[in-house]
Image (cartoon, rainbow, N blue to C red; front, side, top):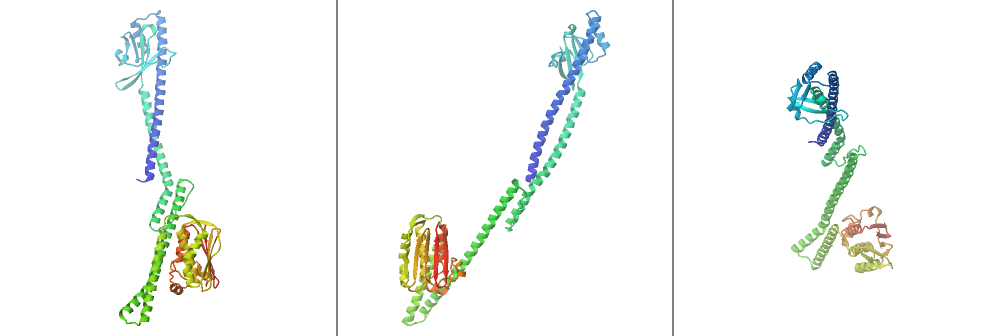
Length: 454
C-alpha cells in the first residue's frame, strides 16, 4: 500500500469518527429538545384538563362522584385520559392498565407546577405520560404517543447520516488529492534516487519550497553531491593505483632484465676475469636498487595505513643535527658540504617520520649538487628549509615531483639509485602532520624546499 493511501485512509477514519461523534452529540441534543417539547405540551394539556375539571367540580357544588367523572371525560372527548381512585379505574379508554403505570420512573419537568411526567414502551410504541394526584382525591394520567417525535428523530438521524457520508466523501477526496500533490515531490525524489542508483550520478532532485519536503530534497542533493565526490575520488584513486602499479612494474622491469641477462651470460659464457667482476658488480648494484625500491614501497604502504602519530614536541636544532649526521656520508662521498645554520624553535610532530622526510629531501639535494657545492638545512618560525646549489628544476616539472616514480632526469636518477619515490613519501608525511611543502627552483641556481608547520 502506498504511503499516500495509508495517510488518506488514516485521515478518513479520523474524520469519520469525529463526524460520527459530533452527529451523535447533536442527535442526542435534538432528541432531548423534542422530548422536552413533548413533555411541555402534555403538561400543558394536563393543566387545561385540570382547569376544566375544576370548573365542573364547582358546578356540582364541589363534589363529583365516579359516574359524573366518567360523564365528564366522555364529554371531554379524550381517548388518552386515565382516571383512577386509588387503584380502581374510573375512566380508561387506553390500552394501559394500572399495573403498567406502576413501573414508570416519574420526574417533575416543571417544579412550579404540581405535575409529574414519565415514559413507557408498550407494544413497540413510545408513550409519554403526565400525572396529577392533587385535584379532588383522584389520579389523572394524560397519555401522548411519541410516534411523531420518534419519526422526526429517525428522519433527523437519516439526514445527518447522509450529510455525514457526503461530507466524509468530499473530505476524503480533497484530502487524497492534497496528499497526492504533497507527495509528488517525494515521488520525484524517489525517481532521482533510482536514476542515481542506475549510474546517473549528476542527477539531482528539484527543490520546490522551504517546507519539510523541500528541505529533504536539499539534503538529498547534498548527499548526492557527497556521493558523487566520493565516487570521483575513488575513481581517481583507482586510476592512480593503476598508474602506480604500471610505473612500479616498469621500474622493476629494467633492473630485472639486466640482472637476468648478466646472470645468463655468466652461466653460459666464459668471460675474462675483469668482465666477470664488472657483471657481478652490476648485478649487485641493481639488486641493491631493487632492495631500496622495495623498502620505499613498504614505507609508502605503511604511511597509507598510519592511523595515529606519536606527536611530541621536537627541538628543531637537534632534529637538523640528527638529519645532517645521517646524510653526511652520502654528501662526503660526492665532496658536498652539508651544513646546518644556527636556529631555534620547536615544532610538534612524529620525530621518526620528520627525520625520514628531511633525510629524503637532503639526499635529493645532494644528488642534484656537484662537488664543492653546499646543502643547507635551516629551521625558524615553524619552517624547515632544505636548500641546494645544484642544477635546479624546470618550472613546468615542479608540480609533478610528488607523483610516485616521477623523475626529472630518469637516467641520472637510476644511475644514483633513485626511483622517484622520495618526494611522494615526504608529501604523505607532511599531509599526516597537516603541514605544507613548498618547492622553489631555478635552473642552474639550485632548489629550495620549505616545510611549513602550523
